[in-house]
Amino acid sequence: MHLLKELTEARAVSGYEHEVRAIMEREMKKHHVHIMTDGLGGIFAEIQGTSSKPRIMVAAHLDEVGFMVSEITKSGYLRFTPLGGWWSQVLLSQRVQIMTENRVFTGVIGSKPPHVLTAEERNRVYPMKEMFIDVGAHSDEQVKEWGIRVGDPVVPLCPFEIMPDNDTILAKALDNRTGCWLALQMVERLKMESHPNTVIAGATVQEEVGLRGATTAPRLVKPDLAFAVDVGIAEDQPGVETENKPKMGKGPLITFLDATMVPNIRLRNYVVEVAEKNNIPYQIEIMTGGGTDAGQFHLYGKGTPSLVIGVAARYIHSHVSMVSKTDLENAARLLHEAVKGLDEQKVAEITQYL
Picture 1 (cartoon, helix red, strand yellow):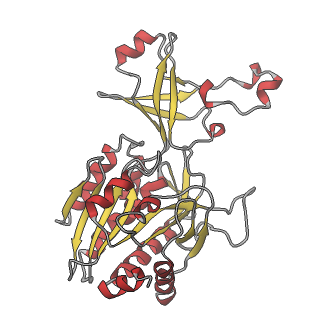
Picture 2 (cartoon, helix red, strand yellow):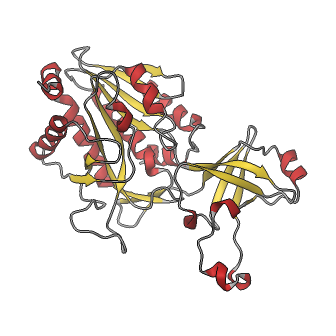
Picture 3 (cartoon, helix red, strand yellow):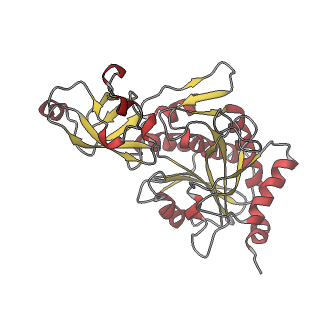
């Protein structure tokens, strides 16, 4: 878990993914693979198997939700705008890091103490546009002297921790550093054994602000089939606990539907068969809100069979999230076994609609 810790604690909000990209590149180079990058910053390792075809893409995304400094007040406070989807109620009193060209500053999203709140303020959700970040400055001039500028990225702050059950991982940015970890697992495992295809594993950029890197990456990779590796929503806590919905620790997720894609049915059924054949527990995710990079992958070229495989996560799009280590290990197994069976004939069967 040392690699996942490093990935989650790296600071990489949408458009500012360089810290995580550097880790991905370092790990890929250990396996002496051909590394490919697109013009937006996506990075992929090409792992040659016994055949150059089919080309199988396994892609996470590098970015996490965060903010950008949008204004510096006369008193030295920072206003901010979101990068990605946030619910404002999770923000107050949380610590953040402001990344400038020369150093990183710690700040806190300011909030009034309960002693001075009016009755009306107590009973409403505080809008993000009224929030500010306090970096301990006393004026806008002092903020500028420190080197903080409008446009600087703001990153949530949360240390990595494994909980007492030795399975639950608590960290920021598990959406989608878990996917980055899974992509690197594919590079490591496939370099050690034969597979009847060429796999291109890595991560896109700017998923959280509109699947932007998912548009450019397929043009680089030219996949015949694609897997997006991401997190889904764990519905196992009070208030959202639902029967037959994804839960942490019950196996990786296979997404049957989200707001951006109905997956290729033959590919979906193939992965289910692989899971059952190899006694890998799995869960079905049907998510009517939100989507993943596969929403763009499946539209590449004349249409590319695509599927989302991931893990159930709690509290995503906040400063802290949770996933199961066992789910991650089983997701890596499922991806590995699925990819090993995708030769030209199998992909032709999956792709054929006539």
